[in-house]
Image 1: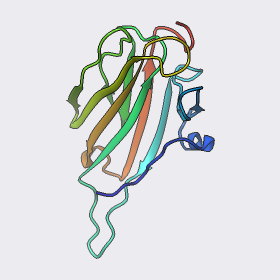
Image 2: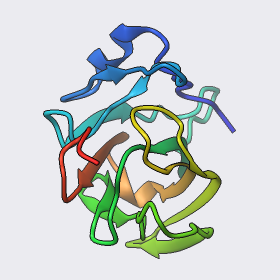
Image 3: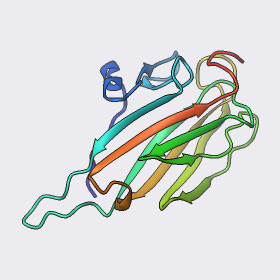
Image 4: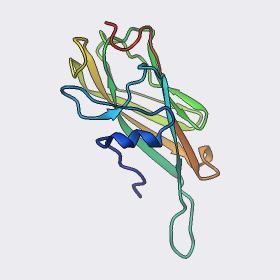
Length: 165
Protein backbone atom coordinates (compact mmCIF):
# COMPACT_ATOMS: atom_id res chain seq x y z
CA UNK A 1 0.00 0.00 0.00
CA UNK A 2 1.23 3.49 -0.88
CA UNK A 3 -0.11 6.66 0.75
CA UNK A 4 -0.56 9.31 -1.97
CA UNK A 5 -2.18 12.13 0.03
CA UNK A 6 -2.76 12.77 3.72
CA UNK A 7 -4.49 16.13 4.08
CA UNK A 8 -5.86 17.59 7.31
CA UNK A 9 -6.61 21.10 5.95
CA UNK A 10 -4.90 22.84 8.88
CA UNK A 11 -3.21 25.09 6.33
CA UNK A 12 -5.82 27.49 4.84
CA UNK A 13 -4.04 27.19 1.47
CA UNK A 14 -5.04 23.50 1.34
CA UNK A 15 -8.32 24.45 -0.33
CA UNK A 16 -6.45 25.91 -3.32
CA UNK A 17 -5.95 22.38 -4.68
CA UNK A 18 -9.73 21.87 -4.85
CA UNK A 19 -12.08 23.32 -7.49
CA UNK A 20 -14.51 25.56 -5.55
CA UNK A 21 -12.59 24.63 -2.41
CA UNK A 22 -12.76 26.51 0.85
CA UNK A 23 -11.57 25.83 4.38
CA UNK A 24 -13.78 26.46 7.40
CA UNK A 25 -13.18 26.33 11.11
CA UNK A 26 -15.27 26.85 14.21
CA UNK A 27 -14.89 27.28 17.92
CA UNK A 28 -14.62 23.54 18.63
CA UNK A 29 -13.50 22.10 15.28
CA UNK A 30 -10.11 22.65 13.71
CA UNK A 31 -9.93 23.63 10.04
CA UNK A 32 -11.62 21.36 7.48
CA UNK A 33 -12.58 21.38 3.80
CA UNK A 34 -16.01 22.97 3.44
CA UNK A 35 -18.63 24.02 4.31
CA UNK A 36 -20.72 22.87 1.40
CA UNK A 37 -23.79 25.02 1.08
CA UNK A 38 -21.96 28.20 2.06
CA UNK A 39 -22.01 29.71 -1.45
CA UNK A 40 -20.91 26.39 -2.97
CA UNK A 41 -22.60 23.00 -3.08
CA UNK A 42 -19.73 21.14 -4.79
CA UNK A 43 -15.96 20.75 -4.49
CA UNK A 44 -13.66 18.51 -6.51
CA UNK A 45 -10.04 17.61 -7.12
CA UNK A 46 -8.18 15.41 -9.59
CA UNK A 47 -5.39 13.17 -8.33
CA UNK A 48 -2.69 11.52 -10.39
CA UNK A 49 -2.29 7.81 -9.59
CA UNK A 50 1.30 6.98 -10.55
CA UNK A 51 2.52 3.52 -11.51
CA UNK A 52 4.75 1.70 -9.07
CA UNK A 53 8.48 2.32 -9.28
CA UNK A 54 11.00 -0.37 -10.09
CA UNK A 55 12.14 -2.33 -13.12
CA UNK A 56 8.59 -3.42 -14.05
CA UNK A 57 6.24 -0.53 -13.12
CA UNK A 58 2.62 -1.56 -12.63
CA UNK A 59 -0.51 0.50 -12.28
CA UNK A 60 -2.58 0.30 -9.11
CA UNK A 61 -5.28 -2.40 -8.99
CA UNK A 62 -7.42 -0.10 -6.87
CA UNK A 63 -7.33 3.05 -4.76
CA UNK A 64 -8.83 3.43 -1.30
CA UNK A 65 -10.07 6.89 -0.30
CA UNK A 66 -10.97 7.59 3.31
CA UNK A 67 -12.24 10.83 4.82
CA UNK A 68 -14.19 12.24 7.75
CA UNK A 69 -17.49 13.91 6.82
CA UNK A 70 -18.79 16.45 9.31
CA UNK A 71 -22.59 16.66 9.05
CA UNK A 72 -23.11 20.09 10.61
CA UNK A 73 -26.35 21.97 11.32
CA UNK A 74 -29.86 20.84 10.43
CA UNK A 75 -30.28 18.07 7.86
CA UNK A 76 -33.66 16.59 6.96
CA UNK A 77 -34.70 13.20 5.59
CA UNK A 78 -34.58 14.59 2.03
CA UNK A 79 -31.05 16.03 2.30
CA UNK A 80 -28.30 14.12 0.49
CA UNK A 81 -24.51 13.93 0.29
CA UNK A 82 -22.80 12.51 -2.78
CA UNK A 83 -19.25 11.56 -3.70
CA UNK A 84 -18.48 11.82 -7.43
CA UNK A 85 -15.76 9.40 -8.60
CA UNK A 86 -14.86 10.15 -12.24
CA UNK A 87 -18.55 10.67 -13.05
CA UNK A 88 -20.00 7.88 -10.89
CA UNK A 89 -22.21 9.40 -8.18
CA UNK A 90 -22.18 7.60 -4.83
CA UNK A 91 -25.15 8.48 -2.58
CA UNK A 92 -23.96 8.12 1.04
CA UNK A 93 -27.49 7.43 2.24
CA UNK A 94 -29.74 8.89 4.91
CA UNK A 95 -28.49 12.14 6.46
CA UNK A 96 -31.39 13.13 8.76
CA UNK A 97 -30.01 14.81 11.90
CA UNK A 98 -32.83 13.33 14.03
CA UNK A 99 -32.24 9.69 13.12
CA UNK A 100 -29.71 7.36 14.66
CA UNK A 101 -27.19 6.65 11.93
CA UNK A 102 -26.14 3.07 11.40
CA UNK A 103 -23.21 1.74 9.40
CA UNK A 104 -24.07 1.75 5.71
CA UNK A 105 -22.30 0.21 2.74
CA UNK A 106 -22.90 -0.45 -0.90
CA UNK A 107 -21.49 -0.73 -4.37
CA UNK A 108 -22.03 1.48 -7.37
CA UNK A 109 -20.50 0.78 -10.79
CA UNK A 110 -17.72 -1.33 -9.23
CA UNK A 111 -16.91 1.17 -6.47
CA UNK A 112 -17.50 -0.20 -2.98
CA UNK A 113 -18.15 2.20 -0.13
CA UNK A 114 -18.88 2.25 3.57
CA UNK A 115 -19.99 4.86 6.07
CA UNK A 116 -19.81 4.54 9.85
CA UNK A 117 -20.85 7.21 12.34
CA UNK A 118 -18.60 7.31 15.41
CA UNK A 119 -20.08 10.60 16.68
CA UNK A 120 -23.74 11.65 16.60
CA UNK A 121 -26.40 13.46 18.59
CA UNK A 122 -24.04 16.15 19.81
CA UNK A 123 -23.28 19.69 18.76
CA UNK A 124 -19.80 19.68 17.22
CA UNK A 125 -19.90 23.40 16.33
CA UNK A 126 -21.88 26.12 14.49
CA UNK A 127 -25.19 26.49 16.31
CA UNK A 128 -27.29 24.08 18.34
CA UNK A 129 -28.23 21.32 15.85
CA UNK A 130 -27.40 17.66 16.46
CA UNK A 131 -24.27 17.17 14.36
CA UNK A 132 -22.67 13.92 13.20
CA UNK A 133 -19.19 12.80 12.27
CA UNK A 134 -19.04 10.07 9.61
CA UNK A 135 -16.04 8.00 8.51
CA UNK A 136 -16.34 7.25 4.78
CA UNK A 137 -14.23 4.69 2.91
CA UNK A 138 -14.38 4.06 -0.85
CA UNK A 139 -12.47 1.39 -2.78
CA UNK A 140 -12.16 2.34 -6.43
CA UNK A 141 -11.05 -0.21 -9.07
CA UNK A 142 -8.44 0.78 -11.67
CA UNK A 143 -11.13 0.58 -14.37
CA UNK A 144 -12.45 3.89 -12.99
CA UNK A 145 -9.11 5.67 -13.63
CA UNK A 146 -7.64 4.01 -16.76
CA UNK A 147 -5.63 7.13 -17.64
CA UNK A 148 -4.11 7.35 -14.15
CA UNK A 149 -6.29 10.34 -13.17
CA UNK A 150 -8.86 10.08 -10.40
CA UNK A 151 -11.37 12.90 -9.97
CA UNK A 152 -13.09 13.05 -6.58
CA UNK A 153 -15.94 15.45 -5.93
CA UNK A 154 -18.30 16.18 -3.07
CA UNK A 155 -21.85 17.49 -3.46
CA UNK A 156 -24.43 18.40 -0.84
CA UNK A 157 -28.14 18.74 -1.62
CA UNK A 158 -29.81 20.35 1.37
CA UNK A 159 -33.25 21.82 1.90
CA UNK A 160 -31.86 24.93 3.59
CA UNK A 161 -28.76 27.11 3.53
CA UNK A 162 -25.96 26.85 6.08
CA UNK A 163 -26.77 28.49 9.39
CA UNK A 164 -30.56 28.16 8.97
CA UNK A 165 -31.81 25.89 11.73
